Image 1 (tube, one colour):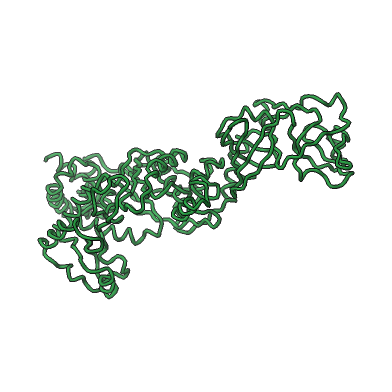
Image 2 (image 1 turned 180 degrees about the horizontal axis):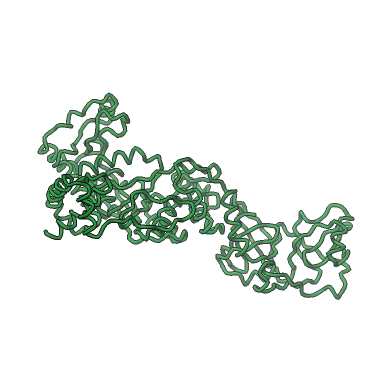
Length: 558
């Protein structure tokens, strides 16, 4: 116990130094529980001892407090390297503990990427800890496949976590804390019908059960698992006259009569989000919570629970909404579309899911840069595909090798090509990185051209990139010249082409899910599935599949 007193004393002195000489008992207790979880089982003794020590320290002159703190090693806030786009976290003391807490109602989408990436970046900046917590305490909002999809999406984004928690494994913990709240008189069982309580709440009137004896609440709590949905709920006491009716005596636990994908029918009483989140954030030692400003009321609700339990309140950092006018993000709408056959799956290119974005060849680095650029500002931000494409292009320009592919292919046999011009045409894999080598296209005068590249006028010259200049007369392609200077003099359009011999059959899924068929040069056979290439004059595309000699691409953007 002597060691505990030493720990409490140091934390009390640190807290006093931060608050003008007056340490806060709840904050000190919270620091102990967060940094020294081994004392959680002796919470009562910790609380009692902390109250005595804090009381004594608060009576000491500030200079005496400062001197004693220096003798104990002093206190210095950790210096951190600044990262572009992110402001420093407030009130950093010791280890920074963060959490990314998705609901497993489907895979992650680009809206989730903001919280995931920012938590990861702060974890890196402060050398802290990131917890992946899957919040699945509403059986009706759980998609069993999400338990696998969410980690996969995070891995793709390069987000690393130090601990993984699934809330449905922690039901007994929530029950223990609900019971404690009842025993200390901070929560009560309410059997009012929902509409009746709403009338009371909106009128700032107390529920008739609010002041019921603890024994009566305990009896109802024991009975709760056998009741029907809506028959009773456990409410946390707040301010019944709070200016925001939503915060008045909010629901902590309720009955859900449905089978949970992981725990089946083992439980019927489930915690509401605000209750389970607050309990877990405390027990896991979360120091900073990054969340949207639509959670401002939830943060305030949770603070009531923290104060009831005498826990240290974490730092809540709220950021503005992320608007995506041209990105479809609704998980429920996407699921409905998949079930009805509108979408091919969670990776349908029309969706804003992480797996859809990845399948199209959007780079994780582009998403991370986007989220870092947006940061944690309170103002709302708008993201468009155009913005994402611009960031992605910067990464792919250097990375993607170049190849020819022809959409809507039309077979063309060029007449009159001099024998000396027939043979191998060499093209660089990347014009800015000649060290990557060349690709060889066999030119024998028989090629595929895109139908739209065939000129309507007989005297119009077009240049086959890297090869020859041709014209069309009465539908017949004829050799015109071979030099680039002649092409310039004739104001020839430069088009890509694919040798008919050895051409690879291709299919490309566009961003609107339409299919475009064509042929590509045979050198594409060396590209691996998953690689992103630049199809010249078409755009960037990811090779999704090679099957039976046919190549399937997903189009990214120009």
